[in-house]
Image (tube, rainbow, N blue to C red):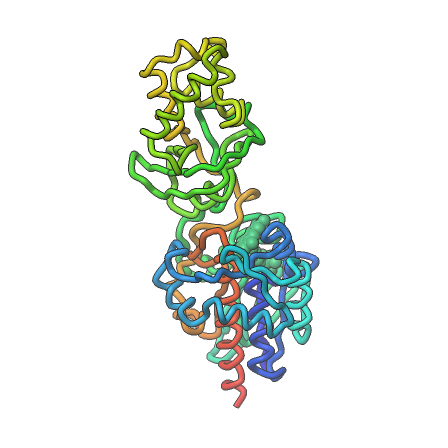
Amino acid sequence: MKTLAILGGGAAGLAAAVSALRTSEGRVRVVIAERLARVGKKLLSTGNGRCNFTNTDISAAHYHGDVRFAERVISRFGTEDAVKFFRSVGVPEYIEDGRVYPMSESAAGLLDALRAAASGAETATDFRAAKLLPPQTQGGEWRILSADGTELTADAVIVATGGRAAPSLGSDGSGIELLRALGYEVTPLLPALVQLKVERPSVAALKGVRVRAEASAFSRGRLVHSERGEVLFTEYGLSGIPIFQITAHEECDTVTLDLCPEISKGKLLDELENRKAIFFTHTAEDFFAGMLQKRLGNLVLRAAGVEKLSRPVSSFDGDTLERIASALKRLEFRVSGRMGWENAQVTAGGVRAAQFDPETMESLQHPRLYAAGELLDVHGDCGGYNLHWAWATGVTAGCASARALEAAEK
Ligand SMILES: Cc1cc2nc3c(=O)[nH]c(=O)nc-3n(C[C@H](O)[C@H](O)[C@H](O)COP(=O)(O)OP(=O)(O)OC[C@H]3O[C@@H](n4cnc5c(N)ncnc54)[C@H](O)[C@@H]3O)c2cc1C
């Protein structure tokens, strides 16, 4: 019986194992080699424990990196295919704003179902693949050496070891290095779907403040991406889904927040005149009462040049109101970088996907070597796109490798 080794028991590796077992109907031995003590640890943390496993709008527009490669994969494995795959392992779906979750809203339940479907596979846990040696002869075996010297041999290998994001959940980039050592090109790696660090103005005092806003990112004055949603201030910078989405794109040096995205600046000025009348006998500190959280209001006032919060609102002239309106529409932050790998949800960059066949995920360089998931240079937006990528590539690699091994057996 031929052996398929799957390196990494994460989302892509488990989907590959289920697909290989089903395709071969048990005629291929499937071994999952997982670095941690159990498979699927990261899955438990996804979607805040609810696991947003796909989206109703799977399209290339939501992917970054090698988008053309991504398009070729997802055109063969879209939302319906992911939903069908999960129903087939006993997980019906629940949809909220296009985001697809297991009906139980439990990542742990989805993992249990996946593990049950993959139970025909052998699992070697605490196995950190450290070296991958290609067959010496045509049709020979791959050798996989673990960090502590254990050896596994296989007729085909799927590398599904993830990227570098969230290393405490298993993915430390070691799988990317396995492929680099075999001569595969790797594009620069960057933490993505992560918080931004802000250099100035200091936001430490705003820690915990949330606001609905339109966040826009700029690189040397050029707009990189805009996104509306809830922005969260942290001790060191900005967080929340709009900020995460910004970091799915290229790096930026400036982020602006439009705190009143539904109102034009003209209408906002009328509103500010109104507030001046309401708070005429009060100090600047009260000017945003009921409109913005106090700490955020104070930041806006300072950005508009109102330094003294004890200043009477009655002293606000037309020019001051104009500056306040501008600060509300464009509160500017100088970005000093991204938070690191521990905080990131995904990896931007990775092993160049174009070195693999998108119809099978098999290497164009080494027959019987496949790659799947986040270790490739494709990443998606927030909203289920990254797990979808893991399922799509995992299922493709699992089916294709099992078919190839069965054909070789005949
Ligand atoms: C907190 C958090 C929340 C997220 N929420 C969502 C969400 O709701 N929806 C969504 O679409 N995406 C989400 N993501 C992203 C998504 O989880 C990943 O993109 C996806 O899990 C990648 O799948 P993968 O199988 O390629 O890698 P992983 O899931 O990282 O799995 C890789 C596996 O390989 C193992 N491994 C690593 N190196 C080795 C080695 N050398 N030898 C053997 N084994 C190894 C790891 O231990 C791990 O089990 C989230 C990520 C995080 C961190």
